[in-house]
Image 1: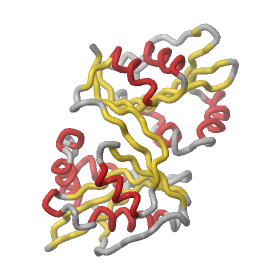
Image 2 (image 1 turned 90 degrees about the horizontal axis):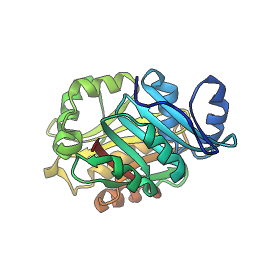
Image 3 (image 1 turned 180 degrees about the horizontal axis):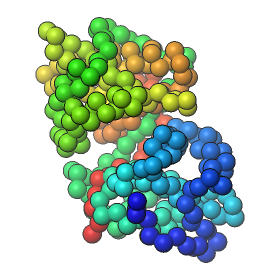
Image 4 (image 1 turned 45 degrees about the vertical axis):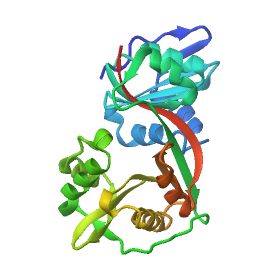
Length: 271
């Protein structure tokens, strides 16, 4: 993988690749706020062959981190000084990036958006005991037989963001631990949700409903059903939502989720 240019020292800040010797420092840092660093922990543990992480060390203290997964997905955390140093080393022509809102202008100097416009992405969380489960519709487990249906609903719900999702990709995710639930009407799947469990938390990664079946409470029921399963094994749940999607935010708040952090999100390509 070649997502980064040469590493160097920037004034008192040293930019280094995460390796075995730095893992204790890395885990101490991410475990202080696992929701904020969830993808750093997840990809480093479960997708290490496709993951690169840089650390910005300021007198041995971690001042920032950048993750690149699959040479396209970028997660950026830390100070503006660290972000500027990371971006100077990022050699990818196309990216999907999530970062602190303070990094927006730094990113936009190097990359221009290719998907709609850039967005604010809200992370919402709920802890066990805070949930309010409203399950008013029957929820069914979905498996490989419904992988094409899941992909079709995702493409329909958001063709810009999920337009390239295939049944094969959904099936691959199932084989890696993604658990899908849904609501059926006349034997057809009309609403879906996906849950992925780790030792740290449960992430509800997808919620989507066919347009003609919206505003019936299906999404609320699915998220509540996923939370019910999640809290049997974990005590923290997370979900991401576009900050300009009030209906989805209200649906998640109904079951107990509260806003935690908001990030800058963009798909882009280099100028």
